[in-house]
Length: 206
Image 1 (cartoon, rainbow, N blue to C red):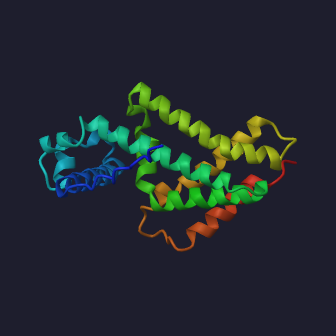
Image 2 (image 1 turned 90 degrees about the vertical axis):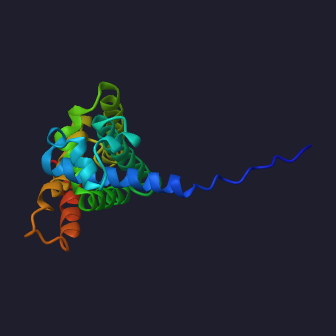
């Protein structure tokens, strides 16, 4: 029986690497600009200028400004979902899984506050199909949390579990706004937020 031969992976050319790096730079600057000025307040010319290219040159990488927003928010939703899934699949008691989910979400909120602001303000600017995909990923992510909450609080309702999860998301995602304040000290935020989030998730309803 012949042995299958696998071709080596294609090594990207310098041109392909440069194009990929430019695309990442455009997404990075788009995140910053959309967070500061809103999606409607940024033009392709603004985005190109932030990366040292002309507005029309952006079309070499994206079909238009909406395509940039799609890439940002769909990729972000996939990142959050996949990170949460990895935390959940590591197993353990419900409190252990919830602790990992809190750690993951806190790290995400503190390291990527701009993209959270873009999602909060401009999610509805997505086309219907992409908005539906983001909503599906979000619901799947929430289910990772509520599944553990159902084990931890078996007498509580599904609505209560979902409310707890959303309350914690609101707490952790609020850093997307406060982190831009130069007076906010970042060093002590993670343990503070993590402890507050776990308290909200574990406290019994009396």
